[in-house]
Length: 369
Ligand SMILES: Cc1ncc(COP(=O)(O)O)c(C=O)c1O
Image 1 (cartoon, rainbow, N blue to C red):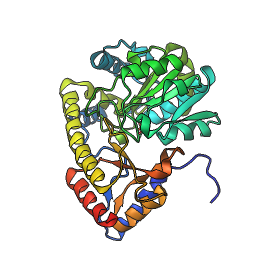
Image 2: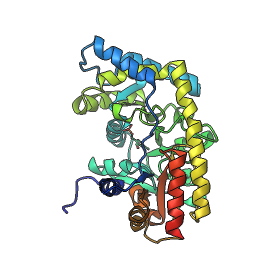
Image 3: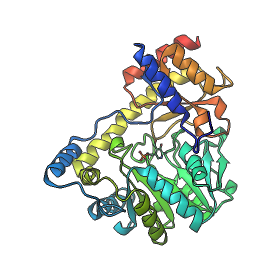
């Protein structure tokens, strides 16, 4: 096939094959997808219904409605003890288009950007798509898959904590050291889904950074397509102009419904979900270790386990498909996350019930024996 303008997600190939197997009547267990399975809070749905019946759904301001910016600013004060002016909050249709605009502006106004390898694939792919040269910083299992400040040689750096695919969390001291070396683009989309320790925000250590976050993970609202960024004032005019030209406005209904997310009871309900994910993590972690996978960095947040499968294969891409064919368990090959030792690794997500995780482990046990 002709080379595409931007790299696809390899996990989509796994998903396509999984769907075919399902059509053939196989019961596939999905440990490949990074989408929380829990339902969106009722309050959010109620607010959406109310708003839908009362108002026309017209465009909003390109960077989102002020009450949502205020609610997010207040959330930063309450959660992290940092003051953020609502004007610095930019609402986006999911965090992804925000990241796209941000990468362009940071590259042009701040300088070259590095990203972790392995890391979330869009960082590298979007930079390439924008025709911007970025630099992968290899991160190593022996160093808990963390970017070390002394290896950062660019003006800007993407950090992702808790991270996809490893679930590691950067401490406040580590973020501080990195922020002294480079302008941080801190992808905090997995904040709130933490199991052993708090995940500090980059805003706690520096005002001169950009934070990316959204409603897709902790807030469970993937299909509502809503995200946000907190950016330095100097970058606002460029970011606003890009968003005006590319997305016009974030979805109106989603923005008004999302206001409910910041009500006390809703936040409590969402926070209690971390316990559900913790149980799933514990079962999957124990099971994978018993099966012989090495887990060099045990996840402290997000909903992924990045497992070294080198005891079973030297080609984790092939391995992921073999596992799917033989066991109907879908997992993501490391290749999706970069080039650094990714042929050894696979990612398991725990966005499914403990029962299904146990069943998947049982199937893997049979296959690997
Ligand atoms: C690290 C990371 N950042 C950003 C996103 C994008 O999320 P969304 O565009 O739904 O906000 C994802 C989605 O999986 C992710 O894993």
